Image (tube, rainbow, N blue to C red; front, side, top):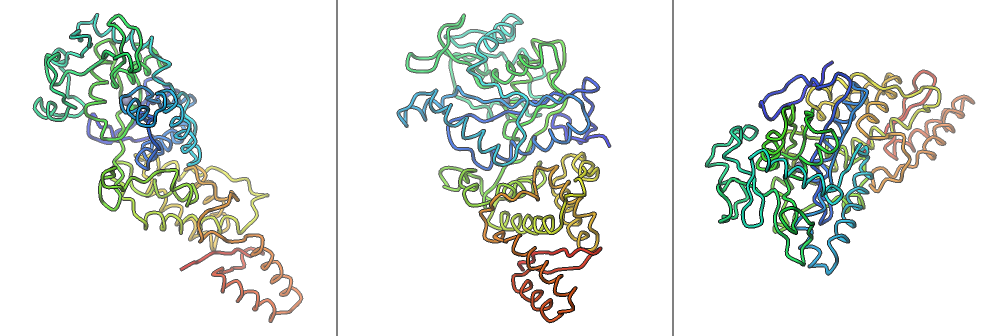
Length: 451
Ligand SMILES: [Zn+2]
């Protein structure tokens, strides 16, 4: 089954066809490293992680690039507030981000370029844009000339007026049009800066992504997929297309892929509302699999409304799946990858449908042991290891598997000896622990039903 992706630039779901038959390159805008990652950052990383997993089942070479923005005024501000260097701040929060994503079970991208490691190529890309006549120099700034680029607005489909309103407009005299955006800006001596043909300065945000993409996949190469949160469509991705297109004969990117925002109790997350949920805080209270399932519970293009019940529902499901998976031995049956989960996810990453499918398998597993194996392999495909014995932080999963298996063994031994009274007593004791048991194909499977 072909992979279908909703392509933002054409506003429709399309069959995905890469430029080269066997290989795919995908770039996703990564974090600006100045504070602890929140669940919005986690969603923006977990959605492409699922796409990366699906792409890898169909293509030999999948190159997934997620950048680190380690030059930004927000980083400089955090450094001066905390009396640390810019380097200390960006290093600290890069490490935290990468650890958080690893804890949530995300696969490592093929490349994680940092802006500070790519300054020569960023300067070179700006020079190319200047030479092609699409940029101008004004008061030590290099600015992109949006009036010259006729397709400006093609991704966001905004009108000229809307773009002027939507741009992060600081009405600046040095701009020919308010829509024009900075490729390079001057740095004062106390700001991070690099020597350039335009003096000591630093790049604008948009040019960083375009330069790092070209640096890795090559100039005059079309990117297959570009992802990011839908708040980046304008101006960030619109500007990336403008920059990349005016210096290349090839199309900049074929598929634009955007995820929706995370709301907390139906409200936008913001520092001023005090409702920002940090990944670190979640990880200290919940199992990473619970958080992962909760993040995948809404379709990626829809807003994800985060509330206590989002987590408790995910927790219940994980516990149910886990107890079922661990109720039988998996030694003889190698866990095989299930095509159905890949087909479901190939249809524009339908993660709610994938979770429904796991629930159906769990339901069927009570009468069909093979479905336990399918449940384990399908969950594993979306990054949830049901056989893992890692200590879970939630109360509901404080189940002692060894103790339960031991009681079941004693019950079966009692039955074999004809001691049905003892066997029933053990069954009642298990029921009291909310564990129901079923004898299936000569083996006893058990299920945890907390409700
Ligand atoms: Zn970007």
